[in-house]
Image (cartoon, rainbow, N blue to C red; front, top):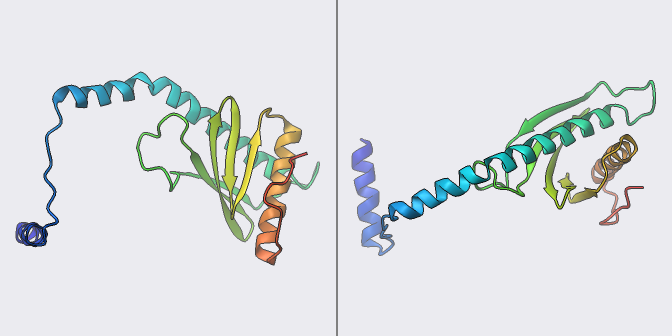
Amino acid sequence: MFHSWARFLALTWYEQGQHVRHERLPVSEFDELQAAIRRYVHERQAEEQACQAFINALYHALRTASGPGLPLNNVTLDFTSDPANRLRPVPPGGFYAAWLRLGLCEVLVRVRRVAGAFQGEYGEGGCFRLEEIGEDALITLARGIIRDVADTYAGVERERIRPLN
């Protein structure tokens, strides 16, 4: 059955003039691609580990964003593939993502390394850049995320870039 459908589609595309001629890549170009992927494997792995550690630290900051002794128990973390990534493995400089459940809602957080800083996006247009990663900076970011998500659900217009401090 598959072969008949494949043949039908192939004939239909050919008849409509939408056929595409595929040329074989020379082995050397394919080998160059594989070599480039292997060459940067350690850099990619280091970026992935750093970004996942950052997201994990942000998760813990969200749990403590209410202040000392008042943990938010209904915050969860679920790492996922970044929906905007079009290559696997993620190339150097690519985003890593996670869904953070904040009680009744979830917010997608995307993070990447840029010149030693963590740069990211969250929710409906929220963005951040942290040069130094400390507990205070992460808690400030966590509170900003909670505030921005609350504003989104409340329909409040917010400024595009909010200072983290």
